[in-house]
Length: 167
Image 1 (cartoon, rainbow, N blue to C red):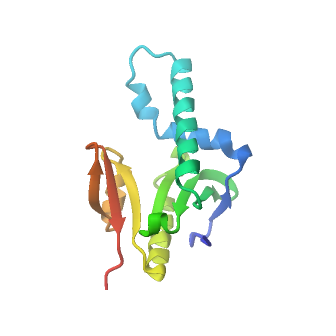
Image 2 (image 1 turned 180 degrees about the vertical axis):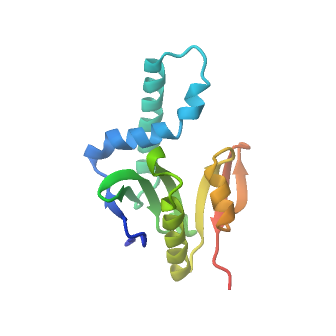
């Protein structure tokens, strides 16, 4: 898929093996609060758990989203996050598999800008745009503000949210 973010300081580049440590750090940043509440685990145990979860997630994404685009989000050439998108997942439309920004890059409009760009691309391709979001994920508020609607729920935790262009 061809996609260039409209934000002037943001670029995308395809992930490669050398990105694995920074991708792990991005993933770990999304689990920090959760890990802070785990009683009785040493920091080593937490790191090993996060690494095993990241490895499982990465493997799952690579296997189950064949044909997807896996990008590192860069701000002024520094790795700021990751964006994984499938242009036509299961023939149903665009699927944001994952969008994560490192804490230092959150709340500066980067994520909103990328999502709006994807929404515009979705409109141009006449395909809905969807994403799975954990019910407790703070980003869910952003998706709601942008007009995403919950269309299904899995295990009471994962909400499939969808955005469609309306005339």
